[in-house]
Length: 202
Image (tube, rainbow, N blue to C red; front, side, top):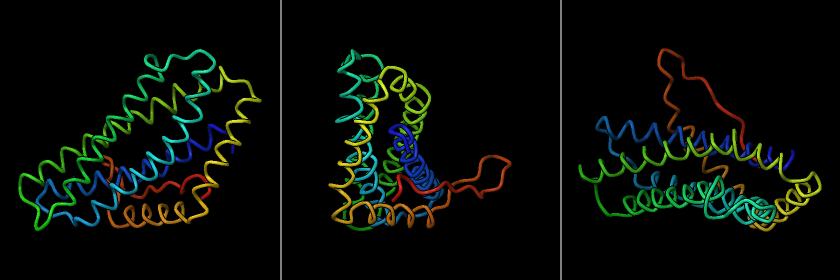
């Protein structure tokens, strides 16, 4: 896979897990009580894979290369993406904090979880669409092929440093378990039978 294909493929798994989180939030909104451990698992996946792994490669490698060729860090597409990464982290921290509370969920906690989960789902879906449709094509247009190859090598090194501990395998299994337990909601007037491939060669 090319540099950009790696990132787009990672988006597939993130989107599938977002669908599962949305499904759980819908169940809670309908009166079902969430399993606190499952909510912690969602927070773990989004913090460890979507943020530390995926956003880590973007911020530390791809965005840095774009800044080097003249993209401003504090404004424009890079600035917007960085702001949205921070917004996403706040949602995940809120979800994690709610899940770590003891005892049965209260009505107030249910409402807070549904709000945080849906806010995060909406944010990240829109964010991924902007990256796939706007930022990544801009990167391919502005970065020379040799630089994109260098970034791919840095991605491989980044992955090797994490995969040696079995972290990627753990996160893939975590996501697959959540996706299976909380199937994506069917689109209006359409059957629910979609499932994307797993990401980034895990």
